[in-house]
Image 1 (cartoon, one colour):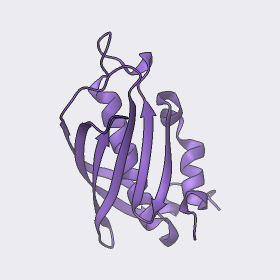
Image 2: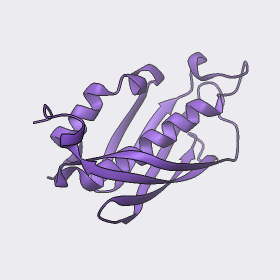
Image 3: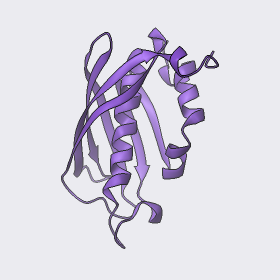
Length: 147
């Protein structure tokens, strides 16, 4: 499939992902296993009057890594879940910062995928880096209504 964002499994992820809507996140699938996930820091993301809560950035990271892995396995009719997530926060994200998580699968096995991401602001300043391992399993384990 040329545009993986249109794949029925990814479209179902979008429909179910209320948390992503709450945080104002959106993404583009650049290619199989490569996703750009975006979020602009608003009042709702703040832990102090000026800087984002680390949990909001962690949510962006987990979503980006998850969809990168999902785009890798959706054509096999699989979905993914996070097994391990490791984050390094490098700089604060400030109110109105437009963050981009650039996530890529670095290794894909039959069931386990490994992915990495960087999160940068609109100035190209690195905010965080992260890596994750994800479990891939048949979509039928979560729903028979995807297709």
